[in-house]
Image (cartoon, rainbow, N blue to C red; front, side, top):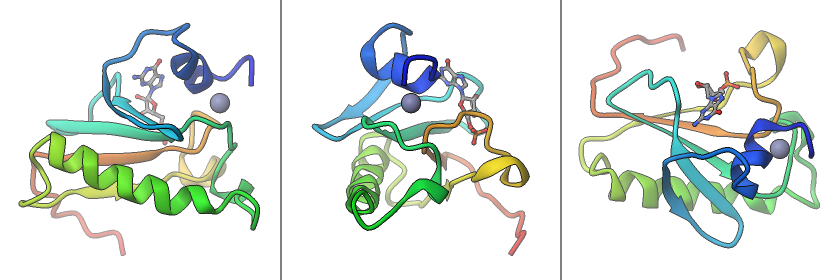
Length: 114
Ligand code: 5GP
Ligand code: ZN
């Protein structure tokens, strides 16, 4: 998608600090980190949000989860643990309309909202 920030990062038009990459997925540091470790794990193919998943593209979700584990290992947070957040749509607080998973680590997340 031509006007999508994350598609531009994937294309290399916007620089990013890459943490992990494979054929389907890229992971890079969030520009405004909310924790000592804050990485965004993103499918290379543009998908607007979790609400845009369907039987034809849902396979990417498993791949994202496996990529999250690689990111956690690379960043040294796999043993102590981490939090994964997906914001979806306006009420979910999604600001970039390209599906992405926030991986947060290096701190203890005590707030329980569920
Ligand atoms: P959302 O609010 O959509 O769940 O998360 C979007 C995230 O993308 C935010 O945490 C924001 O800091 C991050 N972000 C927005 N623009 C850029 C950018 O140009 N580069 C990087 N690395 N992160 C960005
Ligand atoms: Zn995109």
